[in-house]
Image (cartoon, rainbow, N blue to C red; front, side, top):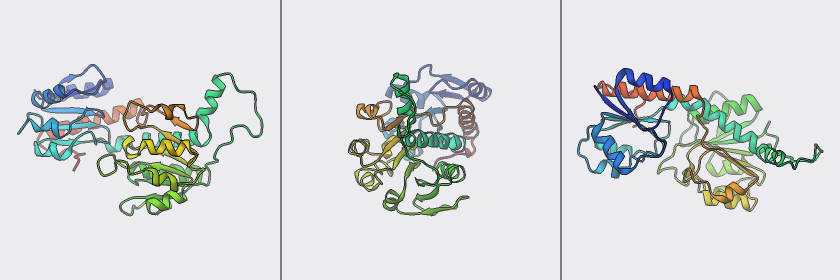
Length: 317
């Protein structure tokens, strides 16, 4: 029977579906795979269901001409931990799970917008510490988001889902920076990255990770933002120059930040953890059971189709 390695424990529904089609091996820990485990995965299995942290870079494929493995089905939409060109050269297809994560990730973006703009994390910490002295008219005044301008960097599925929530839910004006014009079901205006920084009250980053977008946003971008603006990242951590963001926050160049991803996960710099005007989440973008089940089932379907000799539905080019 076809052998498939699943690199992390997944929901029971996903494992049950995988067992219908494959002889599966499931790693029992959540730590990223070591070099020796990456090599073994490629030579001992026909397919691998991998995820963030499993570093299938060029080195991982360099020892093989044609390994046994024929597909790496990524559990997640982001695949910058996989060298797709090197995998293709080794005869290995790479897939991801784009549709399943869209709404959940957009919801987390809205969570971060509201928590940061309205200082919710700061307020909860104050209350839990027993420091709340009661309501008064000027306590913890934040940014009222209704009617503001949101600037979305990356207008793919997730960016458009954020735009819908901002426009329909809060009456926000939507501007976006993207390599090409995107048709949108809400009024949205394409601008340059610089103009987005200058105009937006709230900035949301939703671009794919990878070499093309690494440190896309750095010191110049944050210096151009409004002093009262809020920055939110639900993309990949290395899209942002984290040191530049910390400087911008410390020097008051921007009002606050809401982050679900970090440049060197799971490490979160101490200065970020110490800042009251920063909302920090532990990469919760898709952390809902039904969403993780949908992601897993899509990854299993990608495996099933590819290992049957057909083109999988979510092949990464």
